[in-house]
Image (cartoon, rainbow, N blue to C red; front, side, top):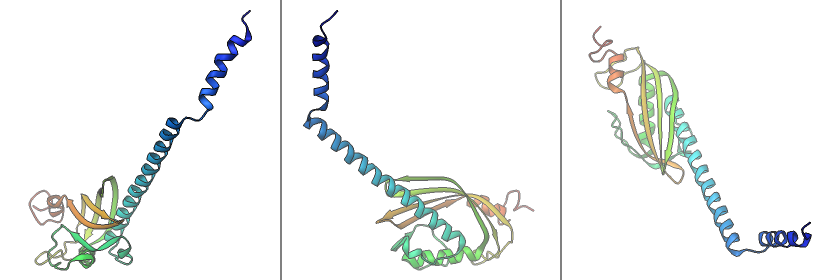
Amino acid sequence: MKNPLVLALPLAAFLCSCGGPNPEHDTMMAEHKAMMSADSVKQAEVEQMKQTTQRFLDLWFSGKTDGIEEIVAENFKSNIPMPGVTTTGIQQLKDMIAKSSGAFTDNKTEDLHLIADGDRVVAHYRWKGVNTGPMGEGMPATNKPIDVHTVDVLRFENGKVVEHWGYMEEFKMMEQLGMMGGEEGGK
């Protein structure tokens, strides 16, 4: 039989080495906690940007602008040319929403992707609506439905939307409205 002291000494040495003060270990743990905290803050910012993007789109498709100042900066800039809208800043967005909601009603969206990277959020969704009002000079209402994919890119500063780009299946929409060739337009 082996001496119990021979077994106890290595075990005691191991236990002491694990439980004693270790500045290097403490530094590593503090750095790890700081990284985890920074990641948590970044993740919270990303989630906030995504929620703000969803609210932005909800306001756009509802045609309402009440409370838009909470999520959009005064110096807002849209990179989408819209005929008849010559204003700038947040008023530009309000005018664009009014014009869009005057042209399309019964708007419904289906979220497909919402991706955040850095200071931008990309929203890809399916938009359905009915063209019940004029879309501009020489483009009267068709009272026809549309069903198109759309992508919006929003840039954020200090938690608010400051810039916007938007892309959609415009040719498909024009065909569906009977404004150009294609299956619907040729009838």
